[in-house]
Image (cartoon, rainbow, N blue to C red; front, side):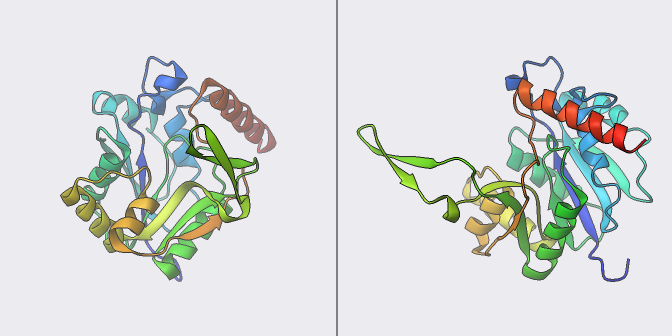
Length: 237
């Protein structure tokens, strides 16, 4: 692993999937021949830097998620399932507290983003190894406006905006310190890049994703992911 920074992957996957209208947790949604969370982890199995992988799953479905990941082919990397929290932030923190390896970087990736490409993962890890914090992101394609007052809106410059995605990667000490501060102050953030920036003042580097890094939120997203994964399987036969 010369030239590669040892990294632990934390996958928050404790969402209920209410907007999908599913019975089981979103992590177990069927995306063809496997569960959504397994498809997401398999996107990382060729990443040499990953030495440990932790999935934060619903406490009520730990055994089901563990079964869904049985037999995943991943060199000598240890894959473990731990109870997630009531929020995404709590799930990531609990994943951090479960780390066993001496990994120097932490990569956080949504359990519902299985289409992430290897090149994007490696670019985010490389950026974080240098700057300390990096996230995948993309420019908005549509025009964007913000509310002002009394029903009025005003346009925003798309070239100054980023839509934040995952993977996100951070120096381990930096992310742990940020989560500790947020917990002590009772503050909650929608993603770890925002948390790290607010709690430590560290600048988070934006790594352009180029699009296609879909997060499964709605039934339409799920159908799209199924179709893309099926096409990829056909192409690699």
